[in-house]
Amino acid sequence: MINLDNNRLQEKIDELENYLRELEEYLPEQEEDYLNNGLRKRACERAFQLACENLLDICNLIISEKGFGMPSDSKDSIRKLVENRVLPASLSTRLEELVGFRNLLVHQYGRVDDSRAFSHLHLESKDFYEFIEIIDAYIEHETERRQE
View 1 (cartoon, helix red, strand yellow):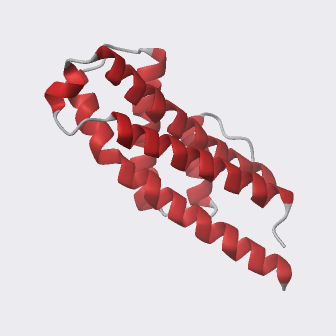
View 2 (tube, rainbow, N blue to C red; view 1 turned 90 degrees about the vertical axis):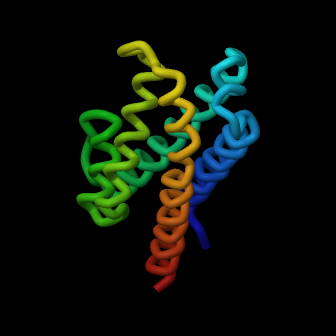
């Protein structure tokens, strides 16, 4: 039996997958189509932002459930899962880059290079999916452990 926390984790994973599907739907294959359509650019950026926020929500739910301590910032949420062997360090670096890009988009720390954003949006979805696979395995492992 999966407890309420694992149900909430699964809900957040489902939301993350929905945002990734939206991003894939909105993101054109050709950079020119992306660059010349402001509405499409903003839709892609927003889907990416929401995907990142769900990823961080998942991290924070696990941190809270397991008592891993209070993260100092978004990237620290990812680091805490590495420190506690939920995520591999190799994925952590890439996820921190995703969060950094999200912060750039959301807080507009600098001008966003749309060509770079297009490339980033195309290349980074695999990291989200790797994260989902690892968290799914974590949920399964935790559920089995609780049943023992």
